[in-house]
Length: 152
Image (cartoon, rainbow, N blue to C red; front, side, top):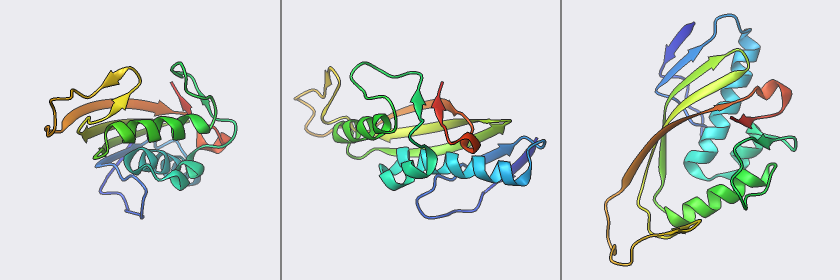
């Protein structure tokens, strides 16, 4: 494994605090994989849909699709819009990318204040002002060299 800290910052792209890349990957494959992950998580961090187009294509398949969300590239757009309506001050810090073979695992840190509605949940009416909540998680995506990102 090759470990890099402080990767290069490019406008809109998510930059992890820590980046670890499988040393067996070619420089070209590693760069393409990291760029697609930066675009995908930049989209989740900002809601900027042009970044999503850099990360997925029409063959996108979400293997964890919840009821009511469309399959394909419209699914993440719909999810982001709905979640940002419920959590308008949403921020997402990308703590780590782990790039191995054709997979990227990302460790994410979300913070925001739930003030709206999301699926069946509604913010309590008594919360005219509330403190932000924090949620940490990880996700994995498939190879951008195939043009497909998959949530697993």
